[in-house]
Amino acid sequence: MIERIEQVVADHFGITVDQMKTGKSRSELDARHFLWYFLHFIYGYSGQDVANRYGTTRRVILHYSALVRDRLGREPFFSKNCSEIQGKLKEIEAL
Image (cartoon, rainbow, N blue to C red):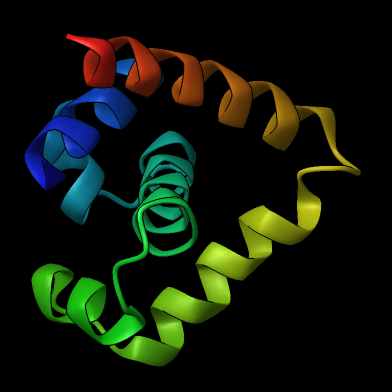
């Protein structure tokens, strides 16, 4: 399931999964932060599980996933991207 989520998020931002995991450009960082938000807050993976998978710390996962969550209602960039990604994920889950 995680691989599907990774692919949807990477495709949404027009990058590869590898770029999303390791890249430093703004779109790569945004994609990674949205990925962590979805894994942690939407799909319920623990911060530590996500951190272990992506070679970072639990604190980093919690910080950036909360950053996305907290900006959803206030900043159109976050609301729009979250909504579009959720729609794509729901399509996959329906299959």
